[in-house]
Image 1 (cartoon, rainbow over the protein chains, first blue to last red):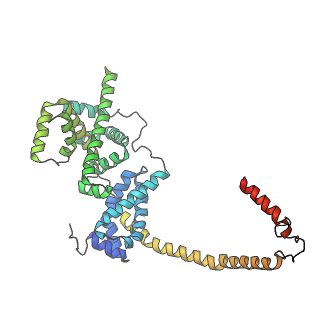
Image 2 (cartoon, each protein chain N blue to C red):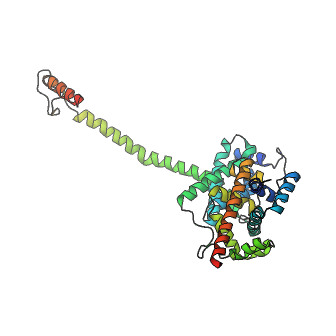
Image 3 (cartoon, rainbow over the protein chains, first blue to last red):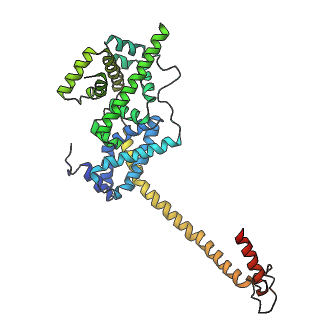
Length: 203
Length: 148
């Protein structure tokens, strides 16, 4: 991890880019577009294509807004705030559509998942190989409120740390803890409800 | 530890954010509570399924493309502004000047002539608002309107 005032630190790159240094801006994009892309992907419904558009619009605004940025040490938070705004504009433009295919009822693929929980002998890798299980889990995640869905996906799928989540979502770490707890609890309840329904149907 | 406290810490347990003492306490509770154990199992398995999906990596060329477009967007914006300014100078400015000149000429040539004292109101004063004789009537009308 580069030092705060390292030649190639994000702060230095941001500061130089703000003065019109194109090379520093390119390096800044290279170093930050991963978090911007993942955040965009979790916030819009149109998949990779929409996420790329959001990232593109974001960096146009970043390039124009950098000269007005006072604290270049907070450039990642600045970029993520723009991602959230652009993604919100994009979402307003179109109605969210479910990420998972809902051609079949949710829960068809939860049989193995439910069995593994019941038997306490889960094999996540094997479960994850089942496209049906994965689609069902993601369909249930998609039913969560946005603020819970986004934080859960960024944590579990993208593997962001709590500090990165705090920076990406612009909220304190304590809020991240709280949202993750609520997201996981809500998801567990949904799985439990499905399990109960399936048990009732088979009885 | 009760179930409420336990479920509140399961998320932190999964992310390895509990100290040794708290972790041991939660694990002890899980050994004796089937309900919390089930909740923990569901959180763990659904989480692992998501983890196995893997992070979304941006396309390889995205950074270069994004930077290129952003850097040229500035000159595009400048070009747009310049084009707008040129359009204004070529078309809108002369048209506006012409319009103002025409308005001034019309005012000078076609404006109402002032009647001399004692003359009837001119044809440009059809309701006689310029006529001294009708001042009273006009005042009465205005007062009536104000009363309304």
